[in-house]
Image (cartoon, rainbow, N blue to C red):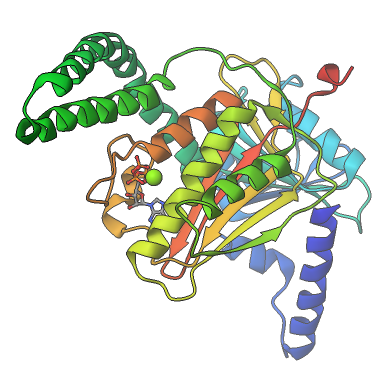
Length: 382
Ligand SMILES: Nc1ncnc2c1ncn2[C@@H]1O[C@H](COP(=O)(O)OP(=O)(O)OP(=O)(O)O)[C@@H](O)[C@H]1O
Ligand SMILES: [Mg+2]
């Protein structure tokens, strides 16, 4: 539905632009100049058109392609055929990530395919093909997964080896506290407080363990409300919140407490960015929306997961510092004097466990983290 609206807007812009243009290049010229691989299939999956980038991408000339059907390049059980059928049925644009295109002449992995129906030509479908490196969202997500994995083992060791002696240290300090002279009490309090700080840190790290998550139906608006309230009564009391929610959203398929943690980390970062830069009219905007067409393959899951629910946290702070962008989701990456750099690593880990995706857009004055989350599968609805 949403993609149809978007297409409508495009075609209006297109018509206005065409009216102004005196001599318009034909569509084939435009497509030829496009650096993206684009092919047009007819209702029988015959190649009606392929631009130059597509010839290169597929390693087949347009003249040869014109003699063939998609089934000559790929076995019929390739998920691309499903994708195309679904696009024809639903008349919406769908993007599918991490596809493998393997056939007699093709051997490509980690491909993103975006399929769009052409309403003017019943059954015709336009495919845009991209390497994983060009598919930003997924590329980042893969980095996050490995970042999260690198702390998994360490988290378990830390939790095990540090927590026990720490309890001993804390108890000893507490005992001393009652017997030492007033002047030394300050030191025992310091030991106790620092032990508490390490314990809190270790507890945060424990979430990185490899336990499977318990999921259920989660009302994302309740989660957001809770996070907003926590923020406004604490670290974000001076910041204005805006909410733009789509009230008709279905439930997220996830773990409520973990989703609270994810959003709390994002909102806390937004608030800290605003406060740290002394932004006068600090604002955090929370949005939810339903968006068709984001699907990913999840390691260990046979079927592909739809991620139609989008939750965004936006702030008008200074933006993410250039030098840490590449490593944003890795643990211990922080630009704050007292930051542990675990917030976003945790967000990435939890999102990964949910099979979700996260995207970031940041420039001075506008930083947005967008979460793509799964909704309750039908078999869970009973
Ligand atoms: N909304 C934002 N605006 C600007 N920079 C951000 C934003 N969110 C995150 N960052 C940058 O990313 C870094 C990493 O964030 P992360 O939440 O992982 O750690 P932290 O906030 O520094 O520490 P912790 O969350 O463990 O207290 C931050 O130090 C900050 O530089
Ligand atoms: Mg943080």
